[in-house]
Image (cartoon, rainbow, N blue to C red; front, side, top):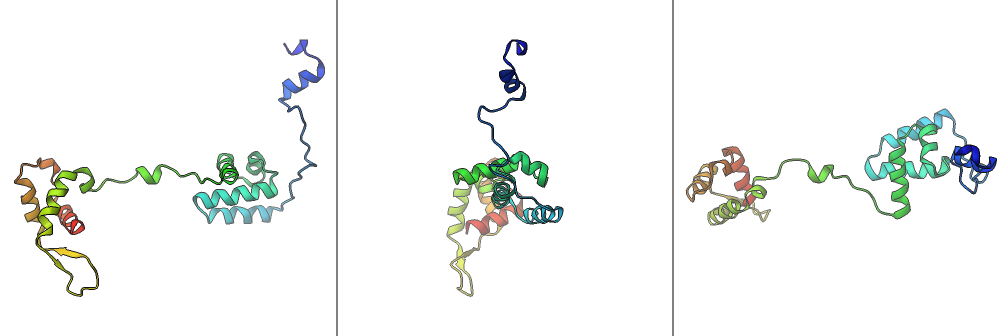
Length: 175
C-alpha cells in the first residue's frame, strides 16, 4: 500500500505527520538546568491533588511547549497526570477521585436507619444539658446496655445490633 503512494504521502503516512508542520521555533521551550529540574520536582512533590496537577500544567506550558510528552521526558513527571492538569486548566473544572467518596465503613446509623430512628426516639427523652452550658449538645442518660436491650425488645435482628462500645458511640452521636 505504501509503495503505491507518492513519496510525500508515503512520508506522512509513515511518520504520522500532521498536514501543517509545527516547528519548535514557533514555541521554543525554555532551557532548564538539572538543578532547576530538581527544584521543580521538589516543589511539585510538596503539593497534592488538583494543586499538584495545576502546578505541573503551568510548568509544562512554560517550559514544555504545552506537551505532556515533553514534560515527561524533560521533567520526569507522569504524562497522564500532566494531561489531566492541562485539561483541568483548559476547562476550569477540577477532577476528583472516587477514592474519598467510596472509602471507609458506613456508620451504624446509615446501615440501619429504622433502628437508629427508634433509638433516637428512645434516647431523646432522658437527655441532659452539659453542666458547663457552653455547648448546645445534650448528653444521653441512656446507657449503651439499656439502648441495646431497648432495640432487642422490638424484635430487631441480633446482627443489626452493634457491640456495646459501638452502641455507646451511637447513643452519644444521636444525643
